[in-house]
Amino acid sequence: MFEVTVTQDFAAAHRLYGYQGQCANLHGHTWKVQVSVRSQDLNQEGMVIDFKSLKAFLGAILERYDHRLINEIAPFDVISPTAENMAREIYTAIKFSLPQAQMLKVKVWESAGSWAAYWEE
Image (cartoon, rainbow, N blue to C red):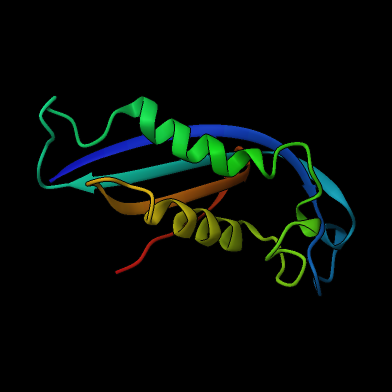
């Protein structure tokens, strides 16, 4: 089995719904997102997927959040924009765009030492 991972950052603000603490207030992060895909087979070029292609898939998704208030973007106008929910949303958005690779995991960092991940069994 082969694994390929890319990481990108974006800046955005959010507030957490129903949270008892400071994160209920509007605040911002430089978010870091890591996407990992896997495949048992390699393509004709000897790759799972071109890093450039995977970065483009991720970049297109993150573009909709960059320098925005995440709470104004569906589905986060209804569900709380936690790192966990962001990871699931990004995972789902990329999952059906991949040509041959299988989604493995998405990690989302709100800060250098705190991340949440989403994957499907």
